[in-house]
Amino acid sequence: MGESIIMNNSSTFLFEVTFSGILVPGEVPDSAAGDRSVIVEVDPDNTVQTASFLPASESAREWAKELAPQFAMQVVQKDLPHGYEPKYSVKPIDQLPRDLHLLPPKFQGDRFRAWLE
Image 1: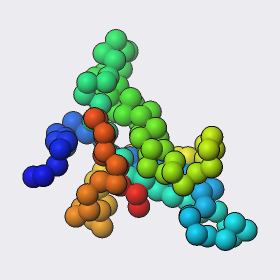
Image 2: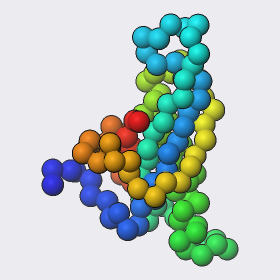
Image 3: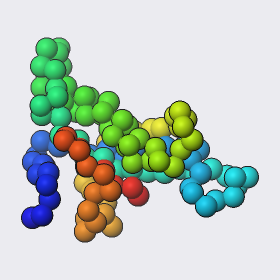
Image 4: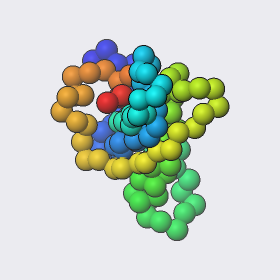
């Protein structure tokens, strides 16, 4: 109710963006750097270029998949050295993980919401 951004879940896409090689603040530098996952919900409605050879829904999904890492980076960039860009993978998911259902997004913008997992 109190959200400032209302997203229509029927038109959004969820992705898990996993960054590799990120040290968690407070970890010993010689310990193995870990993976950090960010769940990103993207609403591509107003950002999709319609001049595409793909069907509209497929084009929207591909565009959302391209945007997801950019949005996820906004969540973890405060923990990274200036200018460092970690490797990442993007995986579509069907629903928000159960443990995140009751948590507010860590970061949200005009067309996305993100949770740090």
